[in-house]
Amino acid sequence: MSESRYTGLIGAYSDRLPLAADARPISLGEGNTPLVRLHNLTDSLGVDVALYVKYEGLNPTGSFKDRGMTVAVTQAVAEGSEAIICASTGNTSASAAAYAARAGISAFVLIPDGKIAMGKLAQAIMHGATVLQIRGNFDDGMRIVKEMAQTAPVSLVNSVNPYRLQGQKTAAFEICEALGRAPDYHCLPVGNAGNITAYWMGYSEMALAPGQTGTAACSFCQGDCQYHQQAVSTRPVMVGYQASGSAPFLRGEPVAQPETVATAIRIGAPQSWSQALAASRESGGWFDEFTDDDILETQWLLASQEGVFCEPASAVSVAGALRDIRAGRIEAGSTVVCTLTGHGLKDPDVAQRHAEAAVSTVDADADSVRRAILQRLD
Ligand SMILES: *Cc1c(COP(=O)(O)O)cnc(C)c1O
Image (cartoon, rainbow, N blue to C red; front, side):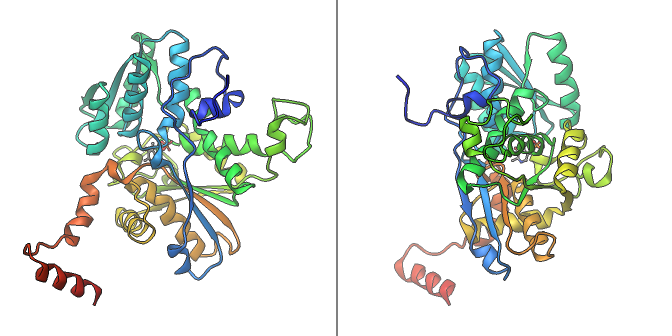
């Protein structure tokens, strides 16, 4: 008997994912995240655009990494693996730890010295992962886990694992289904560059003229499969944004000592470098960069004016979209989607810095509180 309730990505897209039919899905109900249209931030632009955020912070562990992890861990378990390993700026380790717990296997996570958001570390620990803090940065960790996958009985679940990108491409499917078309522009933060690669793959798989047959893009049918029914005719322009202190795509080469408050994209040597460049070129897109101050300002604007709380790295996509809309690089009349990659609660320390100014202490009586209210509404 098939279940009608939503059971996660593998349930929703099994025939678009390269998993064996008898593989036991390791799922936490990831995917199916909201596509929220922004109004307050766009109204003040005075430009007619439809700007949406894909709120990936609402995945089970609070970031888009769950989309890739459900597929990667399902495949690892199907192959008989009893342990997974990853290097992580935080969210990959939180996700790997949760899906390993779900699967009943071990997780080893390598995190950079000191530079991991508190919420993410708490998750890895709570889910029972073995957390190894290395005296080095993400790029050092990446080099080591690749070697471990060769020399120790562990499966690598960073986005160099192709099953990760297969899972992550499903966000593009959901966006096309929600809009009934592909957006004109898709903006996202770029760290290791796996996600921009995965979205481009997803949009490319969706892009078939309805009724078109015999195309290389459709591996499913002769023109009448359900994918053709849902197909879209265009692909978006892919726009990638980085933090200025960690912007190898802007520098044209790896950055040895990446620095940014947006720790999720504090990566100097992106693993999916050539795929991301290809996505950018093929789609007619570009890369741009933002300072930490710009990033935090946009995080604050999204939270305080739209009710959407994302982590700093995520906000760079909206910072970029707003700037490029204002500059006319993204034309009026466009439909734009920004991926908000992770939840704001991941990084309470950074959020607190904003919040501190907003907390005022008053006496515990009605008069004092009323005075504070009236003062604020003045
Ligand atoms: C992983 C991550 C990114 C970067 O994604 P890449 O695929 O590495 O480019 C951005 N934001 C958040 C919140 C992340 O967890």
